Amino acid sequence: MHVGDAYLDLARDLLAGRLSDGASLATKRVFGGVGICAGELFCALVADDVLYPKADDGNRPDFEAHALAPFS
Image (cartoon, rainbow, N blue to C red; front, side, top):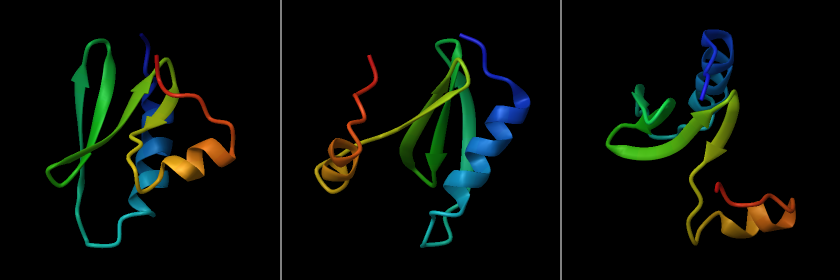
């Protein structure tokens, strides 16, 4: 899986704008992609220049409303 530096920068900018508690973002290359953490919370994966935000019970309806499929 390829992750371009420009796309990773864009993904970080998009996610950083959503942080409300002042947590900082950290990235780590994992399994050929890049994992993104906000503080201690794993919040997204970037693979092949696609951002996959982590879903949970709190935001799952938002994903479903936009017909977004889970990462597979």
